[in-house]
Image (cartoon, rainbow, N blue to C red):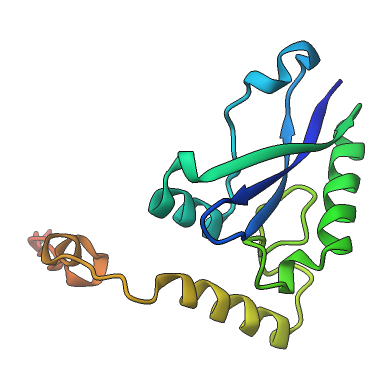
Length: 146
């Protein structure tokens, strides 16, 4: 066994997340507490807490290639990237670049989906100060060399 494909469901609102996990211990697969790592999914995990999510194993894979293929297959089957019932924003496989393979229109939908996940959140004054554009530029002394 190389890993598995899983479906994590939010028991509060019913939204789901499809992902892959490299895990080599088939005997103890039920002990893996990992729930997912998508951008929007992690925000939901923080908001609702781990106790509000349930994970089920969809299939077991024997190689990285099979893991990537199966994840893409499940995400495609459920249209998870464009389905409001899912947290997925990427077609799966190896994760990472969420813009790769998207048309401008599809990427705009992705940005809107991310934006919606931030609605109603307020940033504290302490956090605002930490934003790079809020920090003052440090002046560097000019040394004249003759």
